[in-house]
Length: 603
Image (cartoon, rainbow, N blue to C red):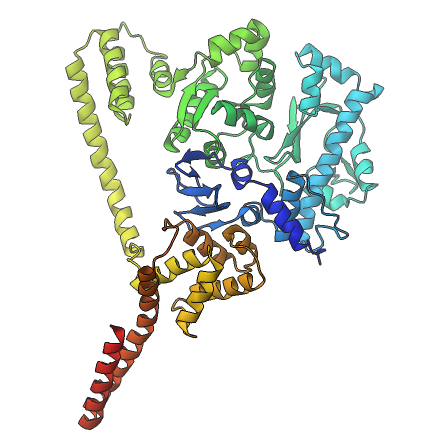
């Protein structure tokens, strides 16, 4: 069991951290009125429905219903227990907890293995870095790095290291620290020989570039050979902690600059990302030898809407930039593409032309995604030839037709008309025809999908009056202990009609009976059920008047109590029908009189 964190420490942590600051590490938030909004990290969406209240210190998603306080956010997002979330927040706020028992005492075997893999990678990262920086064995590695333009600051910043030209130095280093060979093999750090069953190191005589996750944990390596050996770059295999489709190199270091500049520069490889850093581009990230994925896009979209793609200028790089741009545009990003000279990658360009030209002539002179596509469509065409020219115009119009904004469409159509001396009206007419054809095709494709969705789901119906009355009462009760106990007296032992609502007020009475101050964020820590926490967050986000009038209070109570009375009336009506079926008219008349009296009590 975990050592219990005292309640006063929990309160100290809660008061020391700001939920907006914490969630901003995971979600790009923008202030709208009193609250902050962003894309929900718990479900996919393109329109922000995730709200964070700095005043109430709670979050709520109007899309999926997720909600809670700063503790429950970390528990849900990072898969932590309450204790682990509290410890993480305490570290953030520099609050000393002085726990006598380890944090991981309740973890599963899978959790333990995951943690140990990360620990082994972190240890090896420090080991490699130490060899490069502090030993004679690694002295030829810095020479290679310096010749490639690396600085001491970058070697330190990116924790670059060197793997010795030894068969099993990593194996011995880690097994001496009680890491099992089977775990290290699963982690991709060592390999087992098929011949003799002995283990040997995966990386030997290579400059080592550690790969970090979004939290800054080492999860993989890429080793660059110093000689003529193959492959030139040797990467860690995918493991439980390393998935190339989810990781963007340098994201953990670039995130502050991305947030500050509200823009990210996307590269194809980590070498380009590091080279760009030397040019003052601190908001650069890179994919890890794979095409951009929806997971990458989601990570980017949570932090910024503006993406500049800076891929290699060869055919493969241009095609990859097109695919990446399409994916980012579909997710709602504003995309630009930085153009390089033919045959150069960003690293080559910087070494050939220098840092300033890279910043000014490449990054700051990037094209809009549409301009990039129009530029690319010209490749391989002889625009002096009528056939090629008409083909280009046709292809260009298809790209222009998909633009949402009329001003953008007009801009590119005028550009096209001027470039080829064409009628602007004719181009507009053709774009209109293409757009109309696209819509018909899209409607046809989506009609079947819509029918399926309609069959599978129904729009949420309006909630009955008693349901809304109970929610409004809870909202006011959480703000005022006196009102809470007054409602209890007015209910006179009758429960709320919705079981979850009744559970919330039962907890609320216990919370106030302990003399605790009204604070919805604090109250959530008092709840064990995550669903109840979400409901409390949802209710607390409701817009209500600061004070409740006597008339409102009595109306809400009346709605709550009347619903139960209505249920009893329906039961009586059913009994009356049964009496009539039995031809017991005397009993039916008696029940009818009871129903009349019960209906009078509703008024």
